[in-house]
Amino acid sequence: MIKKLIVLASIFLSITSWAQDNTASPYSYYGLGEVKFRGTQDSRSMGGLSIVGDSIQLSLMNPASYSKLKLTTFAVGGTNTSTTFKTEAEKEKAQRTSFDYLAVGLPLGKFGMSFGLMPYSAVGYRNENSEVVTGETRDYKKQGNGYINKVFVGGSYAFNSNLSLGLDFSYHFGDFTNDFTETVTAPDYTQYISRERNIAKMTGVSLNFGLLYNRKISSKLTFHSSLTYSPESKLTTENSRNIATVFYTSNGAEFANDNEDIDVPNKDLIIPSKLSFGFGLGENRKWLLGTEITFTQNKNLVNRFEDFTNLSYENSTRFALGGYYVPKYDSFTSYFERIVYRAGFKYENTGLVLKNESINDYGMNFGLGLPLGFSRVDLGFEFGKRGTTANGLIEENYFNLSIGLNLGAKWFEKRKID
Image (cartoon, rainbow, N blue to C red; front, side):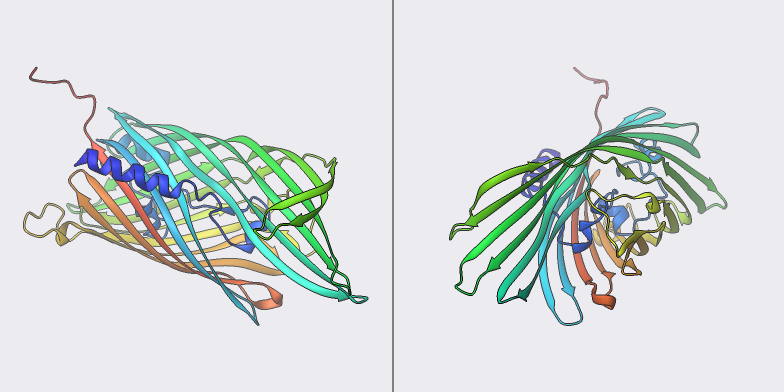
């Protein structure tokens, strides 16, 4: 069964990993792009709650959870996003499939470790408008794509059954491409097309510290708490700019003439510091209800190439409320009683302020954890809204369908029979 699931996971990864243009949000134009959720699908289905370490389920938000593992764990996940973009006058739709994470967790007695790959942020937008100037039609198009990935490795130590500490080290790498195209159509229908292309290549490292603490407060109830902190770090950026006149063939291929490379200054980008803490109550292997609050110093963000008159950043707060319920985890008669049922709510002011409007994000989450022996398939459903139609801005209404595979097995055991 495990071998079959690994084959399935490999196929799943091959389908999703190419989809690096994994956002269509116009708000990804700013700052570091759209910062992706960094947890697994089970956490996401509880609104982003991650206050408990699991013995068979890998958790990526708090590195202190690695020492809770009792099984070697392989985890992979992806999301299909359907978004409706709305202004005061128009509506458009887009769909993306994205790779979310690939990670391995290893139990090492009181120690635990994990390593893997996941996207940190993504850029993917396309804006068009036109005007008529002295008889000429001028069409303007801005579009961008790219991503920042991160490779991480982390470790955790359990001082006892109640307290564990952990640390993640991440290396970030990637690039963003932003094109600005102006098409001028003269009265005789002759077209002149100019294109400015900006490319930013980024590398950098970051750290994430974590703590988990739990304590029995009655024969059934357990109090859970968590703390994570990521200090501010920098991405070294190499910027380049190219200006050219271009034309396009009937199949959309671009040919450039009169290329000219322009020197632009490099600018270090900021990964802002982040502090999260959460707590909750639950009955082990039965239910959990908790909340988590995250503070991010987004006010320190800077832009990649230029300053904007109607843009600013503010410190952001993210609030999550969620939990799970298992009717009977060891039921032999009913598979549905062993399913983990999850739900949650999230609210976040993203830190982006456009035309004096804070860009907020709301979401409702639901999920199922489908057990397969020591393994599990996690399905997640999210309905959310980001942005506003006020002051000519764009409101995004999105639906996320997520799937995660968490494959557990006992490795490194000494054979008792040759």
